[in-house]
Image (cartoon, rainbow, N blue to C red; front, side, top):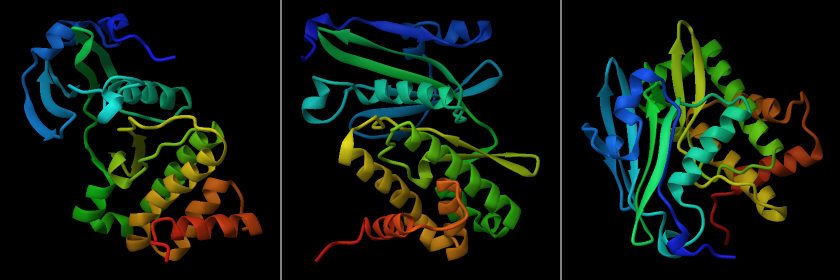
Length: 254
């Protein structure tokens, strides 16, 4: 049953510490934060801001989604914070979620906000592969990242969850000493679908990862990734069929 628009109420959840409360303790104070606008689209924008001695990203949505999704169903902001919390429950590292919530005017969304602490030093995997490709030539570093991404993707799929946008740009790499740490972020569309949609979604997630992977990784590394994802050392007939589906997913069918 669809929710009544007039039943929507403002709410705010603050997860930070005492030093952050004066900045992000309420929806009103969070909206007053100033910063550099680093991205913008028809639904949202992102600010990079300094609060105290730490840096944060404030993502502000002014629409729930496109078309009818603006009025009904789960909004993209809600999807983002719910999925970040879900990832954390599965033991998948994410940027620290500081606060989230949304406000309404006349029964319609006015603002939906989520605030995360900046992970530093870190880059998303797509940027890293494009701007510093030499790191992918370091075997130990490369295999560590592949193992972590395979592990976290498998955890999601075992739980019946589909990311729907598992691209390299949505995977964050933090360099800790010599060991890279993988974090997942930016997942507003992820859900627990049923039946064939769950199976197709899992294939799409893997195909999204392989879209850049096939361009910058060796075939042996792509195979290592898949074997790690499947937690096996040998391919079965089912595995070979799934690999074909992954490789052909974005290929136009004649």
